[in-house]
Length: 187
Image (cartoon, rainbow, N blue to C red):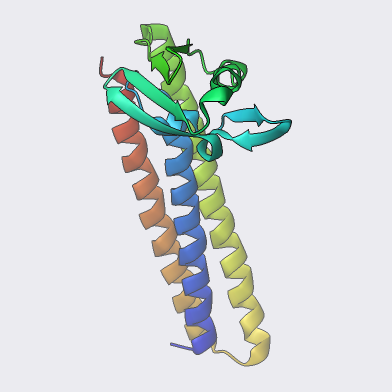
């Protein structure tokens, strides 16, 4: 196989893998009734006049399947961290005991679980669109190689390999969504 075709295939694979990684990060933020430290990844805290991600001002852990514990590095910032969690509008009710913040994670209702499944499927569709965009860009790059003297057979083989990659990554997205849906719908 031509070196340029191999390079394009590798780039397409990396791009599609990035779409899967992004999907996994986004699905981790979807609360399924189980406490997960990733639920608080988007929280921003006003810390001494500057906005900082929660990860920079506190550690987040789970006490049990339904409780998150947030330990601020600086105990004086506990109320600022608590305000940041409330301001993130995650539907969580934090309380503090003076040293740490305790966040009980409520069990979602049936309707809320269905909404979460729809949200997860929308993220999955975004990942598939990204994968298809990678396929389109890679196929354009392959067609451009024709001007550089790469044979049509090489280009056709590259297009077939990119389509196989697209199908494989699409199947991975479907499997990830199937697992997430089962996790969300399990009480």
